[in-house]
Image 1: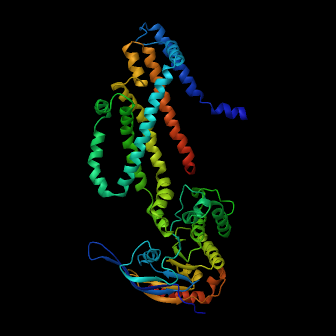
Image 2 (image 1 turned 120 degrees about the horizontal axis):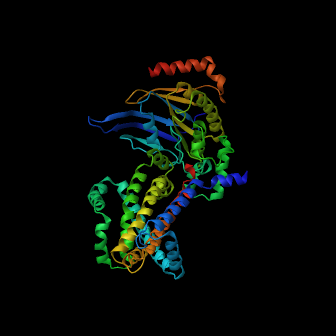
Image 3 (image 1 turned 90 degrees about the vertical axis):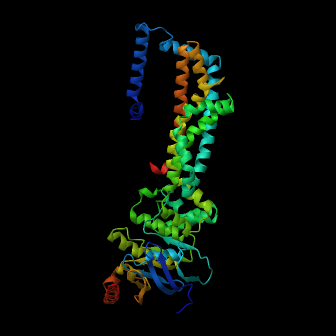
Length: 248
Length: 254
């Protein structure tokens, strides 16, 4: 089933100015994203993954190249950062409903929607907690709820589980996988974890060391819904090996 | 249990130390042989307090000083936060204004108080301005520090959900800078009482500073004590007000 893309990126390059001719972060990146795709950019640190995401989120302008959102030029975006980025003066509930406040939605309606999101990410009972009272995993779940609440066209995940311990991180993969299937969102995620990208994504694009170029576009044909067992299947192992070899 | 909790909450040591101080004061004033106009006894001060309270002078002069302080703080804080925000946002503006700001801090306010009284007269306006000037700098500095310390990651967040400038100010910058800002206000509140008194000492027909000077001229030392105690009460009240604001707005920090 091939649907038409909602986002195309053409010949994108980014050069950061510095003292000797500029630092080339991304080089001639082109790709397409179809609705409900879960795409993962995999690469070593310094490959410009985060830069790419910041350009798509319109936080940064590319030096050359184009980004086209097919349906509307200014799509709604939900972004989850490496750190949870919660506002410490807002409770869990108030952090999650922030995007709705900015849209001017009424307080009661916003609270109802936020409550739905709180249930979705499994934080019932923590509505009135302060961010400082949350564990890293819980804080990141709040961040995911906040990124989804205004029903964005595109969800951008910037190494969202990078700061979590290994066990929590793997549990979050399962949860994100469920949330993605329930919410039917288009997702672009960047990570440096091969397992993470294979477990979550439909497609993995491997970026090279700086300047970042797309070296491999790998289709992940693992069945869904995925659970822990899938990581121990031979096919998962073959895909992981292929990614590993491409990175080196 | 409840009684025990209640008893535990009373600052016994503080009360004890106050009683000891009062006792020492009484004994010294009685047995040292110092004349009343140098060291009045606590009882003299108490009588003077009751007298000025009953004939209305004390409340009148306290109210005048309080009004000067509050208006001065309002003006100083308003101006300082606006200028502080602009400075925090523009390094160029900071470079242009910083020589003036540093120089203005080098001038002791006591030195320019007479000048302000000459310019603006002996009425309330000159005192309000002195208060405002004295409050201005700590609040300005804390505004700049507070706004500059807003994490850039939170700006990214706000931009990613397409917040307007106004929304960024109201939903991000103000609440993020508030703890530091209130810290500046706490310093400013006590300073502004000093500002009002300095102004009143230079030239005034009313206010606690005037009362202070009147007592001084008439060798009515008890009155001076009463005025000083009222000033302490005033400063504590303002300090308490800022603490209340902090309790209300900074719940998330406890």
